[in-house]
Length: 138
Image 1 (cartoon, rainbow, N blue to C red):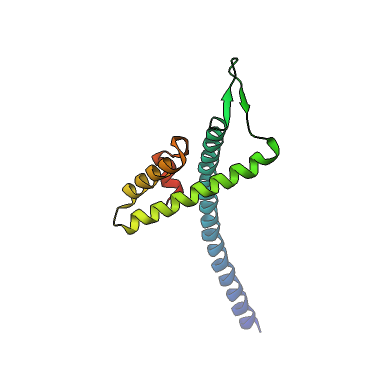
Image 2 (cartoon, rainbow, N blue to C red):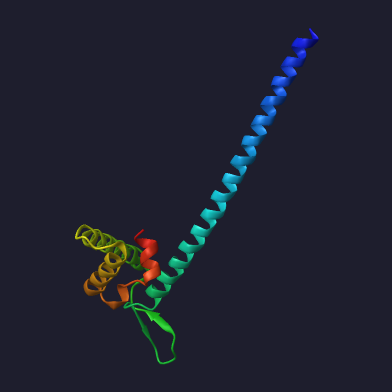
């Protein structure tokens, strides 16, 4: 009976060693994923802040003599209108990017041409920087 018990114990020990090795590698993988996702969140937060600055200084605002910004839009509809406008601009940018890619342009020039088309369609305040275009159109 002792031999059977020893074999069972060896199997258990082997299983424990094997599972602990897997948990260490999966833990490392999870930690890497968390770090990657945190960086992605930071990048998106920066883009959101930049877009909010553009909205605050965009065509819907004016400056008084004291330099304070006053909004000309009504507060109850401004959020929905701004989101709808941003969505339309983003869709237009994406469509123009795909159009230029299908026309045989490389990705970098297609991004710039799509941005030029966006500015021509929606005004100079609607454009993005090259870094923003890379994040949006990747």
